[in-house]
Image (cartoon, rainbow, N blue to C red; front, side, top):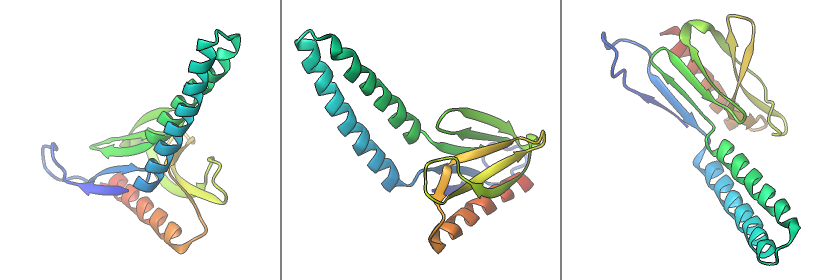
Length: 161
């Protein structure tokens, strides 16, 4: 999930560790399988409607496009803290923030459809909040709570460096 790497590239060699976080492999595999199945079903429907020269071909083509877009956005969820920049790739947008723009991080409610979901949020100096979609988890099991706390600690360490 989050791996700590060396401080390569920094002139003094002293700074916080780089952080790279993605969805767990099991989630990425599941989303990939569902996306392939979705595309197979609607791709076949579009092909069949196209062969029949049916005007309804638009519906499966739109569904195919939607499935590709959603699957791609979910599979690309990530967070990378390198040097003084934090890149947050959420479902609907990608943001790049400088370390000096960030006031801190907190665990709060998730905006994803995960039941009882929690995630980490970046609190910016201008008072806005950026949700880190890649870290959203159901917050029922102690292991989920512990993992989210570890990720929060990693981000706080990066921010303090």
